[in-house]
Length: 422
Image 1 (tube, rainbow, N blue to C red):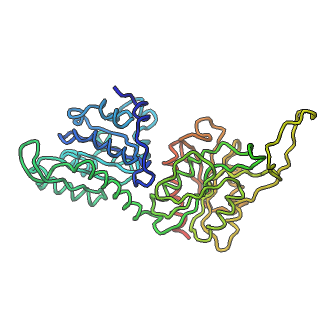
Image 2 (image 1 turned 90 degrees about the vertical axis):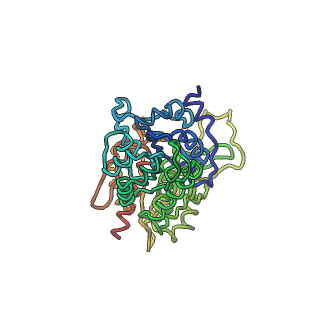
Image 3 (image 1 turned 60 degrees about the horizontal axis):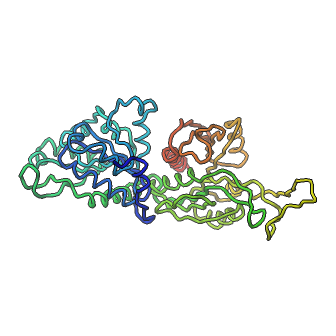
């Protein structure tokens, strides 16, 4: 049996051009015979670069096993709203925030009825109400059930609620009848998932906006071998770039050295030093509506960088002195422009985080600052989670610990609100 670690190790390397590369897909599987296609659908989604979390109904367990779905997805299958281990940390809310798309395939007649009524009586229906991600439904049932007036009413209600409906295929069915009601083939659903995500971006709150983001650390050379830097992984900045893209923005990401794949649909400008980043921002900021400074830019750099590797000096007392000079303040420079974009900055603090952030926002002229306390072990540099506090003129908002993708979506929503007030 393939375990979760092996499945993740054997995952396909996504084509960075794929619209589903690194996207989070919640795949709901309900109890119809078409559930036999679900493992193949998971495989095709992962081939397209998506991360897939499967959620099953009780009925689905009669048609496909959790063992099979875990093997192909690389993640334990979720099915129980009352799982004490997962729900101790409000696991269904975390899943709802994690998702870029909720795809339910197959969606049975019973499930459609419960969704149309707004029920939340199991994990899958609860997730549909809790997520802000687009929802794509792939109905699958007997032709008579598909054509029944009750099902047609439910489909109409779900479409009016904003759900995307994958029209079922026509053909022979397991019951022996022929007609519409077959779940579309996995390859067709993968293409629909990509189009649904693209369409959601086209209608997003930042459609038509241009966003410039800096992310990652900078490296300040001491000599050709050594440099001054910090622990920034770039994860929050890259997550923000993806969230801005999903909100419809045209995004340019100026990135220091990181080990992260470029978010699909985002233009990445690679830089190394703070001066490199400053130049890249100054060349592009006049054309943007929003500047988001997430990068952990080094405050100082060596006054001179040796052109050869510095050697130890045995006749000295075991010390070496570096003369440092101040780097340009990129956020302050952008905020001082006239006209200027909406300016968003980040502050990584180790003590008195809110007081320092409030003062920093005022001093640098930011419209919004996002602060976190990196002394907390579970949200420090390199973590997949974050706990932040948003501060703007006339308002503040504290976010509990959650994934950086979810944090990014909330920040983007706040940016869209501030833009709307301008």
